[in-house]
Image (tube, rainbow, N blue to C red; front, side, top):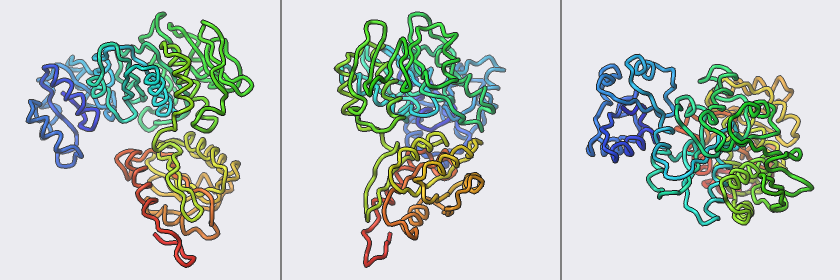
Length: 457
């Protein structure tokens, strides 16, 4: 039985169908409310059982295995019922990884995951090997394994949602970029969130490699009791085993010998946060046998990922920047600190029960944010935090279109940046951060040049 009929659940159904299983498709929403109605119909026509009009209680007795999409919490009624009936429960991540044909590289963390795994994938490809970058990045593991040949490595971005259901998930090389508060609406506490992140190392042994950020106090503590080989990366100072910066150069020491890879300013993706991402990716690649030459080539050529501090367009002296991937306050703080001109920030979205006081303080201290346009479920909470921090340049918008329009028409703002970096998830108004970012870009590309001194949309 497949629970949750979005991308991950449907990819799991397709994989199982190819391997002779008979998946039953189930979602708490009725079929007519699901975005992938046509794909679901095709799967039913190909041999899947239609469970979309039935209850879980009706369907469960005929199941040998329950496969959860990441959106279905492990402690929700459906998996609890399955366990009471002695039916095994498995997440889509674990199911897909069982079909991996080569080494598994897995990475988690609060911020920087997508950039790091994308860069790692480019390093592997630069070495002449085929790979797939998948998982929480938006491409299900169950779909990715189908495109790989025997021996091909797979690179997986892993979320805390996916780690809830792991039992045997066993990456050869795994890493955590950083840990800051996130998804507390689902996990309940910071302690639970940290424990879930640590599960990426749960099944590793002395033959495997764990990579951690030495600049993160939580991760320094986490690295003390791992069974795997442990490597570290740091932008703040040297580490004994790992990757670090020295005199503006990237230095790699993985136990063979210490060597300089390149100057830090040769790395194409800008910003201190991306230096950390680059070090993590380089270290994972080196631990996986990728040559220094391939690592350097990717660092020099990789331009970044869509929706992460992505320059969209400059019009009338204003540059529009899409950071829809900024789904928590810490991620938005990175984007704010990357701004070098006066900036109007567009923020707000789904409430994950994180606080915004630190973000408000960062906005004030940056000196670059001249106005904030708020929209979505968290607009009031963010405004309260901003006013408490002494920031009063605030407007409210009902949706993305109005937010872009307000920023463009802001009195006295004649040049600089308009930055979409919501500091929140997107689920109050959008299906995911990608849809939110695409809508922002659509509106920006529709902007017309200034006419007779008046800006118009």
